[in-house]
Image (cartoon, rainbow over all chains, first blue to last red; front, side, top):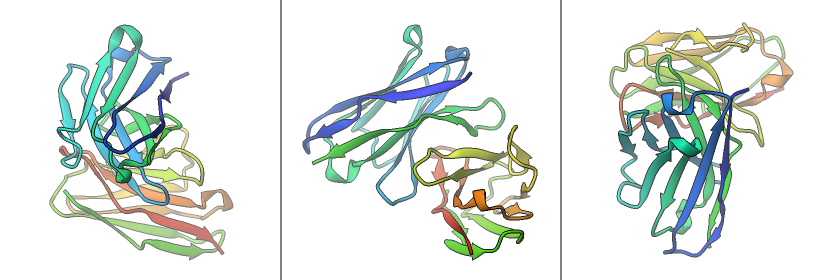
Length: 117
Length: 106
């Protein structure tokens, strides 16, 4: 069955970097685009970045220049490299698959927690 | 594109009809999705293209609207529907979500 699973969260000091990963399985990985979405404790959903199947990338203004999304189709993996981390980047980071209908996020991982402290 | 959901929370009884509204700051045609997030879980896709119900989602969930005003309706609220619901515009980047509507069962 279709799965996306995130890895790599943890506790990191302000100003440092962290890379989180997302592995997809159960589908043709290189045919899909992917998003990263985060949710701060007790807050709503915030879209961060997208990478398309043809490698185009898009970013939310508040993370452009600090975060970089990339993919490695040979490993069925999407990455989010986060630099200059701040305490307000503390959140649960979700990887989502972009469905092939009208841009909906049809599969979500369970999230990986990043704590900047 | 900003999305404004209303109400931010509601309390209703089992069997009630519940309607949540999402307003976009500019026209987005039918490029809207709805998600349900239960406590401690990842969000789950309910509706895409404003009114198409995702496979496996109970038929009591429906969506409507186009342009700038959209609604999510639960025709007969069930105990397992206690959750927060989010709208999401997929018309353009940066993608955005509404602030969420928390639905509680009386």
